[in-house]
Length: 301
Image 1 (cartoon, rainbow, N blue to C red):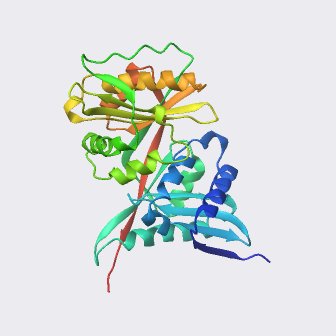
Image 2: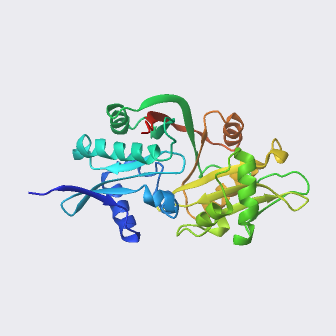
Image 3: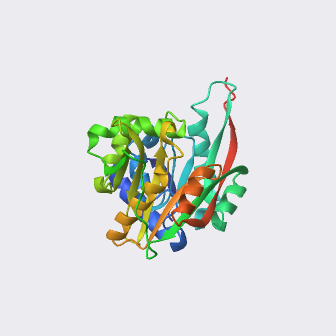
């Protein structure tokens, strides 16, 4: 008789079996849902996230894994045969990871996201106490067989690949300004640039006449033929100049050269400007991503 057991993440060997389980249990339609291999790899480079990662086994066979990222988002894969039993333990682990960041009496939420058409995951979240919020993300896709216009930039601006890790600090600064967040540190940018699937030729920046990085777009390829032009960030000083559209067009040209059939990016449902930039470059809505939360409280002593 086999026994269900769990343990904390123990390093690179676990990374591979986590990927193997993801590829086994995730439906083909959702193979490119976040997080994919490179996302998990980048997350597990962060010590705090590694400490929040736990694996479940049926005997010696991995049946599920979960981690909580820097934004209190629950990321998981699970053999559906264990959805209720192990699933409840995984959600409680996520709650505990969130709870330990709170002061006594403080409340917060454990968050999760799911494609609007992924019924199995929607049911999982509902069964385990998550409630849908008003937050929605938008995934947009563009077929690359259609003509791709050449990017147009204001006079004095240019698009080029990043020079190397020496520009990590400047790109991270542009990201923070563009998205109004402190998350993208130089260290986190370096994690991206050192990941196994990173291609510096696909990491694009727009340079302003004064030499400052005005915008950036990190593209990537996938064996399935789906390329990404994501994320795109434009510094507030240079918004409404067509830089996002120019980066999308240049990124698509490069992805097409590498044999990609389609390009995709995801943005907030509230980011109307980015959605319009995508539409102007030929992208259209592919699917919506719903966001959920579960209330967490640290009761204290």
